Amino acid sequence: MALTERLRRHIHDTGLAEPGDRLLVAVSGGPDSTALLLALCRIGEGFPFEVAAAHLHHGIRAAADEDERFVVRLCDSLGVPLVRDRVDVPALAREHGRGLEDSARRARYRFLRERAIEVGAGRVALGHTADDQAETVLMNIIRGCGRRGLGGMPPVRPLGHWDGLPDAPRVLLIRPLLRTTRREVEDFLRASDVAACEDESNKSPDFFRNRVRHHLLPLLAEGYNPQVARVLADTAELLRAEDEYLDERARAELGGSEYIAVGQLLGAPAWLGRRLLRLAYEDACPRGELAFDHVEAVLGLCRSEGDGEVSLPVSISAVKTGDVLLFRSGRPPEPAAACVPLPEEGRVEVPELGIAIEVARVDRSEMLLPRDVRGSAHIYLDEEKVSPPLYVRNRLPGDRFRPSGMGGSKSVHDLFIDEKVPRHRRHLVPVVADEAGILWIVGYRLDERAAVGEGTRRVLLVRIAPLTRSSGLHPGA
Image (cartoon, rainbow, N blue to C red):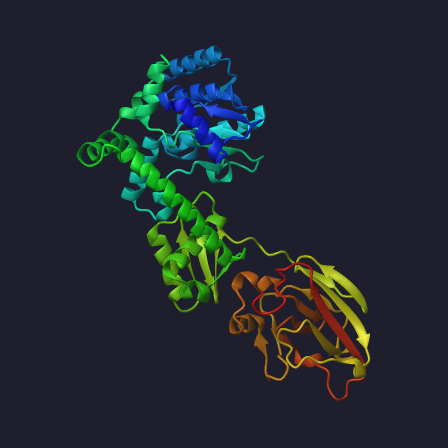
């Protein structure tokens, strides 16, 4: 079956493109992208999608000028709209302190997404073949990888934040040729009487991929399996589907939470625990990647006593506070300060703490005292022992109070440690105070100074309600 017909069936069966779509094809002038453009144009004659082309001159190779001229002639002959640009990649690499390949990739993906949005294309088609997939899988194995690395390049993925780009309308990267070998591409071009350009840098042994392409894969094909490229590509497709299923299982365990319970992590099967860590890390840093040693270091932190922190790639840290683990980028943001006066009677909202708080005078006979103030969303105060005005605020450095029924004073810092309040949530715990000091650490302890007693004549009810799910109102919030 001809490459064009196989590609048409593949696109139709997998939904890589839908009727009415506009595809932007990244065309370097090399054999793979040239074959992809030719085949998509032929498919488009009977399959209702539009094709446009994009070419970026990287400013690296002298021969790139001829590549650009070839792409212009090709698009003219096919009647395909072409968008193109030039970028000084070596200058970008020097400016940002990155390698040439990484800078070229970033510039290329930025260009492709900007042009896709510009021409109204929801998909950008790349010319990666089964041989490219086999090379990627072998490179990942040599470097060390898990199941995701064995899955190689996905046939479809969003083009955006993962590539270091800002948020913008959704654009998908698609790779229609992942089931097509390089030899099939060459045969197709020969039958089409098209001589594509050759990038001389693709033969340089300085690049890891080139050594795999020109030495390792031919060795495996000649000595072990002539179809090794297709076998590796097929294996990658199977493993990628399984990996996606396991990710869904793991995400269900995470439940959308911003942190992981250490007990849950250590009690899970090894495969699930490692996957939970990787997914939580990727939520914090979509462009990052955790190696096996990083995962083991975080698991070691979870098994250790006390709080701690492990530095991870791309300026991310795994932070253990009490019984929870979270991933954060750089320095944690300063908590929003709150200090809101409370009315003598009435209700106010405190969005910085995620709560609404109400004050009311009640008859002592109406009191419904909680058996334990810990975890309660309301308390009663002896109004005659309060020094108005009342207000609600965050905790402050050096805060101390006298917990009712305990005798002696205690720092709020020590209370949070004893109650195992995660460090990253302590600034969200509301503190109700008056001019004389703390009255209530909401959800934890009442100060004995204004506690209702036998001689209490006038009672204040102070009641809170959450404005959001993550209000930090009670233990474990």
